[in-house]
Amino acid sequence: MGALTPPIMIRSLSQVLGFILAIALVLLLLEGYAYLLFFRRPRTLPAAVFARSVQIGLAGLLILVILRFLEQIGLIADWVAALRLAPLTTLPERLWAAWAAAVPNPWRFLLPGALVLALEALIYLTGEPRPSRLGLAYVLILPAMLGISLLIVIPFLYEVRLAFSNMAMYTAQNPEFGLRYGIENFKKVFTGPVAKDATFFEVFGRTVLWTVINVSLHVTGGLILALLLNRPMRLRGLYRTILILPWAVPSTITAMAWRNEFDYRYGFFNIMLRNLQQFFMDLAAQTQSLPLIYNLFAWLSQAVHPVPWRQDPTWAFISVVMTNVWLGIPFMMVVILGGLQSISQEYYEAAEIDGASKWQQFRHITLPLLRPVLVPATILGTVWTFNRFEVIFLVTQGGPQEKTDILVSSLYKAIFQFYRYGFSAAFALVIFFILLLWSIFYLRITKGLRGVYE
Image 1 (cartoon, rainbow, N blue to C red):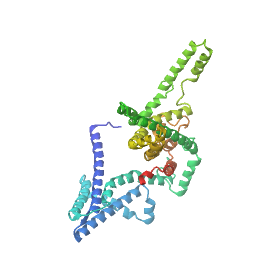
Image 2: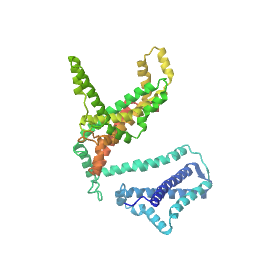
Image 3: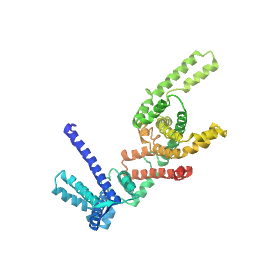
Image 4: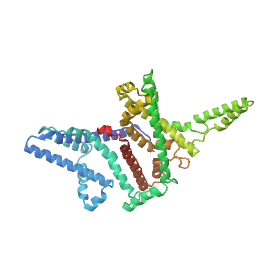
């Protein structure tokens, strides 16, 4: 392996900066295209013919580039072959090859952008302003739409295609795609082991238990802390800062720190338990003349002892729950505290005049008015907890014997330990639809978005 020398670092940095500048230039050109389309109209007929010709040509070229990209990653390769569209979809590639052969670097990259920018400037100069009611909205959301398409939609579609394949470690170079492979993959998800030995329903039940316990404790703990911090008190800002620290620290660092605290010999919890056990043993030795008290301390000295946190399945599960509760309560506290501060004090003043107790105020004022905040936060917390891979992986690695694995950690093992790519894609889709159906069901039951639409 070569040394990391300054020339290599400079070359790598220039490549990264060039990539970022290329993305910025493409976004600039697309934003200019959208602006001209919605907010400028040609003054004359020749200007209109020129503007529409350029816009249609650029749109057609962009569509061909997108189709070629989708064909290259395999999403529409079968359709292109069936419809014999290969000469059309490869047109941008052939044009670029001819252009690259004729123009040296870096002009082969700069001139096309400069040409498109010049054409857009000419369209702007030959046009006049035109009002557009929705144009600004489309111009503003265009970068987000592009990012979502490239980072979410296209990978998700590829995941769907991969689920209907036999791709694994030995077939990755020449995988086969078809409905029968998809049916087989989904059947294996529900009938066979999802990682090494654990089955889907075993891991799914543990995942549901993990999610319910964590989210319940997150919401309850966050609500209690938010109610405490919402009262007038001295040093309230300091308390809020301290309580938000667990959420501010990266979760990987927190999980690794908690993993060390669960060490059998040197972890903080077992050291405290040993000290407490020794304390009860000393008290038992000093109270031998008092039978009842001696029996109590003797029993406590036997009951309190170091815990095999990572060796026993039950204690291992408790350890990851403790870690995730530590991570999740601050987020819920901040969200609920913001919701509490948005509730007008006039409601509570009117309730006090009517003789309502604190519990009645909480039940009939606080909770209903917190619902638009609590429901989305609970859904988000559930999705995060359901997919909380790093806590499981860093604290217990799913052990012992896969007894702390949840669905996403089993999915990780299926991909990176057993190389079952087609099966893993189907497994990931099952997880996605579980969360999607649960979110829809929860929104309908709680009517959490009713305040938004009203």
